Length: 367
Image (cartoon, rainbow, N blue to C red; front, side, top):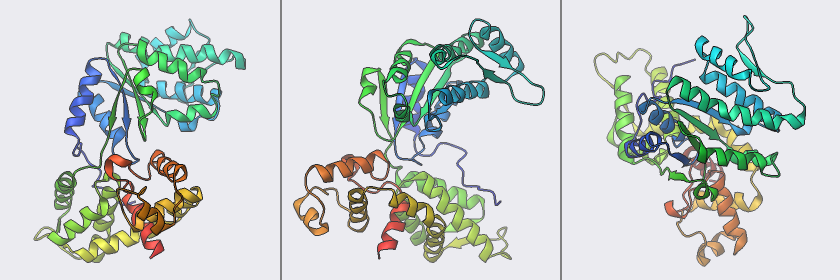
C-alpha cells in the first residue's frame, strides 16, 4: 500500500478552537463538538488533550447493540488507555471491591470480565464509570472521555436509564473531561452544562497553506488555476482534501515515473486535478450509491436539488416549484434529516452539501 504523506502532522486551521477546548479541559469543563464527518472533530480533541497532557479514552456507541456489548466496549476502551503493568496492577487492586475480574493471560491482552446476571449489569456499569476517576487520581493526570455516536445508546436504552446516568456523571466527576462527538448540537447539552462547539468548513487559506506545503515536500507544485480548482472541489472539507491530494500525488507518480523531482517540481495542472477527482469518485461510487439509496425519497430529492442547484433558501416558493418539492413540514423535515446525517449544513452555512466528493458524484451522476 502506498503511504499517505498528506495525513497532517499538525492541526490545520483550527487554532482558535484548539485554544478554546484546551482551556475547557484545563478548567475541568465538558464539551460537545458538532460537525460533519471528516471535519476534524476527533483530531481537534486529540490535539487539545495533548496540549493539556491528558489521556484520551474513546468509546464508539455505534458498536453497542445492547447493554452487555456496551459494557464490553467500555471495559476494552479502559484497558486500551491503562495498559502499563503498574496501571494494570492498580486496576487489579481496584477490581477486588467490585464484581469484576482482571484476566491477564500471558498470550493475550488483559481484559476485564464479570459473571453476573442481566440484572447485575447495572452494577458493572456504575463500577466501570468510576474507574477513569480512580486512575486519574492515582496517576495525577487528566482523562478526556470521548463518546462517539452517543445518540445510538437510545436504540437499546429505551427507558433512558443508561443515558441519564451518563449525563449525571458528566456533571459530577473532576479530573475527567467528557466530550460528546456529534453531527449537530443536541438540546440536552445545556442541561448537562456541556459547552457546545460547532465546526464550520475550513477556510480556503488554511487548506491552501497545508496542501501547497505537503505537495512541495513530495516535489509537486500547483499551477495557480489547478490550485483554485482543487480548493473549489474540496470546499473546506479536510478529509476530502486529504483524499484528493493523495490521489493527485499517486497519479502524478505513475505518470511521471522517470521524473527527477530533485531538479525541479512536477507541476500540477487543472486536468490533473479533474482527472484525479473523477478517478476518486469512481472508486467511491458503490459507497455513495449505497448511501444515497438508503435515504428516504424526500431527502434524496432535496439532496439532488441542492447538488444541481445550490441555494441558501430551499424553502422559497420559486425553488420548491422549480424542483417539485413538497411544501411545509415535509421539506423542513427532509432538511433537518439531511443535516442530522451530516450530508448538508444547516441554515447557518446556507444548506450547502457537506461532503464535497459525494456532492460531485451526485451531480456527475445526474448530468
